[in-house]
Image (cartoon, rainbow, N blue to C red; front, side, top):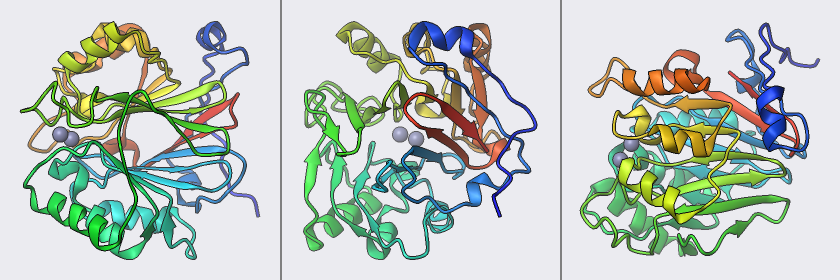
Length: 299
Ligand SMILES: [Zn+2]
Ligand SMILES: [Zn+2]
């Protein structure tokens, strides 16, 4: 039986999208009652980006059209591991590419457990040094399991071999010398590209990195973006949002937690630009699906 995936509420942003994409682009926000996010992710000829609901932190699971699996970050606790189990087919025991944006506890926590349970085929990270125990465990497992590592380099994008590209935007050099004392500003920021659609994952960067990215002339545009630094007041500048020009922004945070994100100033910036905001705290895990021309966002 086909799952009920179709929405009670449909938003079409063709008027804005047509100016950017040659094909019509639809953003569809499905009602919370739907079971889309419970379906295991398998190779289906589409790009699927699942924003896992992990509280104040981030974890994102990508499945490429040929079924390659990419996990970006591991959230603040083991919730990401549970979400992974729900999102992947039971037989899935490997992850093709594991990406760590930066070694803060709200991004790295589940990764050592993930590496014990899934065969990780390669790791992409900045190579920055930090003493956080979970990060040290992550580094030890890379060594023990002899996992090939790729040090992020904005001059070298990664092809997944099936039309999906990982466009590394940031940090500007291998060991983040531009921001030696600020792990957030040295986060990996990347775009996942498929056809005419793109998803921006900016890690925890703030205004300084946003400004540097804007002046670098990099193409920052994305169909959907995750808000940098969980919607912090000192990220998501209006100029940055204008350059990304997303139809929807996802925020992965806990508004009732220690850091009540997203900050009201960010919410009002998004509102002024007409960008739909989805808070995973309210919606639960959200899923972006793209065939390269059309994109859907559901939760
Ligand atoms: Zn964070
Ligand atoms: Zn951080």
